[in-house]
Image 1 (cartoon, rainbow, N blue to C red):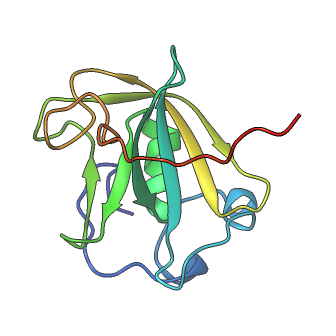
Image 2 (image 1 turned 180 degrees about the vertical axis):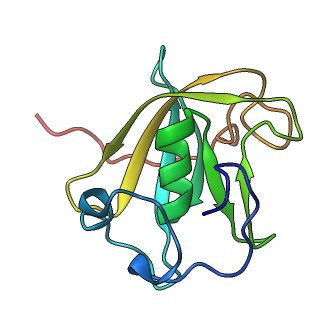
Length: 137
């Protein structure tokens, strides 16, 4: 098997068909997209602030759980990436939770530097206008 940080490339596929060292008991709980991915919502462990959303396949989740470093699947580059490996804006994982449907992960991290590739602390810095109905008594 490759080392935990060894690059693997190629499109991820659903389920265990893609080589992964993820615990089979955890893998069985995941509901993946047709591309074999699960959404990962990333938040700051100390404030709960949502920092970003990324994608993981089984191997990215395995690497995240076993190294304590947030590892994702880049859909645009078609490869794994460890947050901060090139930017220096690291994410040290404090906890990972699976939602009730098994189709999303909540990754709590200690964020060092900006989480967003734009240099912003969070990727959610663009507020949109919301019209809300009047409250009824």
